Image 1: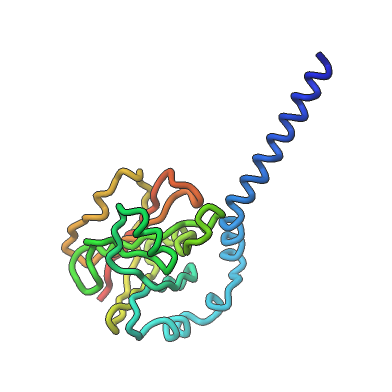
Image 2: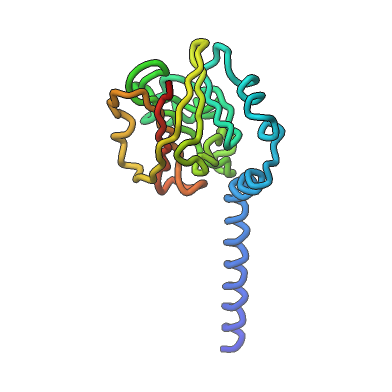
Length: 200
């Protein structure tokens, strides 16, 4: 009886230790990125805002720049968000613009998505959007497209269920930009949206 209880205690302690190791393994990138964000540990982030934008804007690439959270990425256009192989391939190269969503300069909603973390299960994919949860109303997002620069101001962010796909087909009369990633980081339980609008 005593021996069996001792075995169960060791087994319980071992399982707890194993679960902590797995948790650290999976969420290590999230923890590191959070620490770097709060320590401002980035040469790009240390540059004055005007220098960042000078380095980032004014070229022919389709890309996104978010100075507050140190995001700089090419955008892969017209990616089908319902075809897993297609969007996973696109996300190895940058962030993805959902097929059928607007392009910069057009009325409607530009829908851009990316991973929220580069945990070991998606390490081959770029996880550019792990810090977009830090964006709040008034923050700036820049897109470059066909040698033009577009500045968007964040209006709000929201957490939705994965089944709520109506945001992909938003027919806004304004020029809008929606960023999407999985939430919480490292899971696929929910989706985090950051909604912004074009400034003049």
